[in-house]
Length: 216
Image (tube, rainbow, N blue to C red; front, side, top):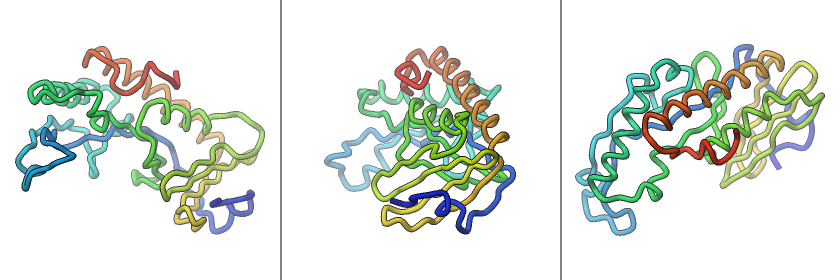
């Protein structure tokens, strides 16, 4: 385990007064229509089709829900270009789920402080945001580990402490922030993401994000 008690969370924890959650839509620059299992030489360069890039895309090919709000049509154009490329090259979208990945993040001063690299769908993002908004008096908000990545959050009456590290229990990020403000930010981020997905499902035509399958 990365941690066992509150003392583990508070040790060397950096206070970040503006730490806040958001959800990022992962944007890919192109659509690969070759064979992932048996690629030919130069396939990853030649068998690709450029996808529409939303104007709100930031470094690392992410579009944050806060940036996308009010610009839903930009995200819809990207996802529509994915659907069109898949149809053009006769690819089944159920096998292209990575083009619709979305992920919760915690940011401070516009920079990602904590990421959740194995969360790919709306239900996973919604579950995390709900845990951060939870009014429980005190205790562990979440505790997760997957393929070399471990993370958790612990709440006291007025603070939330975060740890992120490797599977051997060595933390590489330890920070905390004010709980009341974080709860409000998590609630707003979840509502904003739901609104975005409602618009995307309507404009793109189908639910590719598992929006209707959980986390509602």
